Image (cartoon, rainbow, N blue to C red; front, side, top):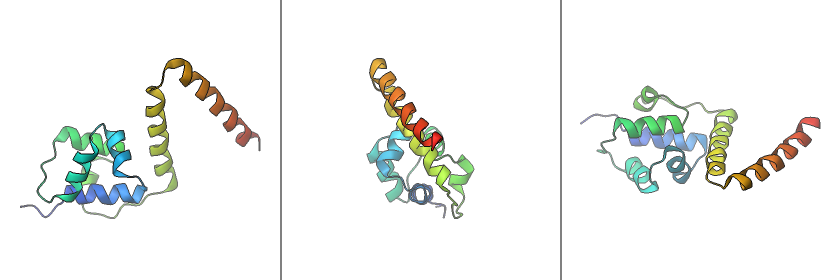
Length: 115
């Protein structure tokens, strides 16, 4: 039995980024149940495909998720995850709705850029 608990390392990274299991599941295209079980159990066998999806969702590398080290997270890491999550949600909308939202968002951003 290895002393590396990948689920706990992933949980640590997820919490450092301030995201929920639900957001991680959505970003990685895995179920919330899978994420929860993986974080809870010591002897979880995680496929390389799932590990790669989680690493991508957390803006991490696979080796980073296999090494027990403290994670340093800055605001831009969290903002990048939120941006990717928003983009993913936008893709699920009908094109006409998506265009309307994007145009509205552009106007909002412009007011901040001009300020």
